[in-house]
Image 1: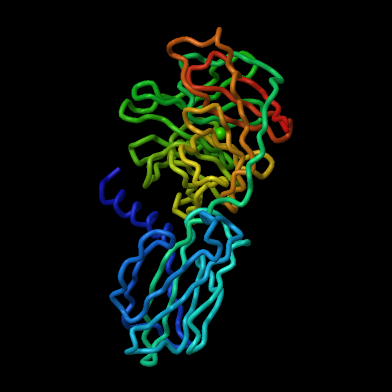
Image 2: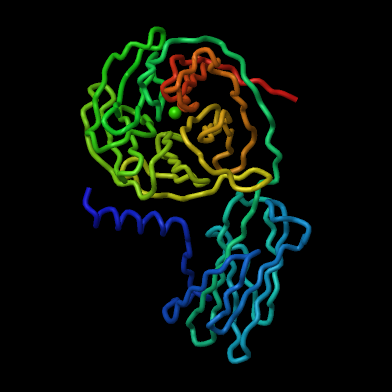
Length: 377
Ligand SMILES: [Ca+2]
């Protein structure tokens, strides 16, 4: 993996984080000065160096900022120029065009996702040029997550030497990615006895991480090497490699056209599965803030489950809005009498959709469980 490739890949991923689509003013071309100012609402405002300044304030001063709040946007000019019109984009979509002389607008957020939502303003000037400014809203979720628990449906052996980082079910077998440098593998495992049917070792420099399957392909992440591997699922022959801009933690297929990657942060990175190029990035939030340390993932009944690293909690996430719908508390799943000094944290979720079986295990756990998620009060 050469450095230039990584730099280019990183630049692409960063571009996906800050969409600032340009739009022509009144049908004309948008050439000319395109200064971009990036500040953050609710924190400090940077002094504008251009003709316009924007302010975005939560209309509910009691709120820390959540989906559903209304924000007032106001525009002031420095008196030397007046915009013919002002185009307002929120999360990449044009939501309003203010005519000349109008300087205030209310941004409603009830239909927005949570997390850091960009607000981009285009000022269309009389000379046909444009100026741009941008801020962002930080919106927490308007949902208080439900608390859910579990019951064990079945228990199977699990390789206690498997430092489980990714788990996928398909057609009666589990596919597992294991970590640690020098011990990382991709393996196919029998469920009932834990036997390893097929395994390949990663080169010693790599630390295996998340694993996803689309069609006949398995995609495996590495933790900090900024590279991932694509395998034929039947032969485990390596077909290709791909770059990863962030750390690699969890990986799951949302559908055949979209993968979602976690990096231990609050971000969900959506990737196109053929070129592994970035599609969009959103943040996961609950009602109290962003939810970090998202780790191994799995799609279950249209929702994304994600381990929260170093906890016994799994977040159930609406991957369209980033909102945590529930926390599933798996405390006590691996009993104390089965824990040793090498037993590590809960990690590894896989789902058999046809059989409605949810598999969970952990790093160096001696057991693999099928659990049923149950509601608590
Ligand atoms: Ca998984």
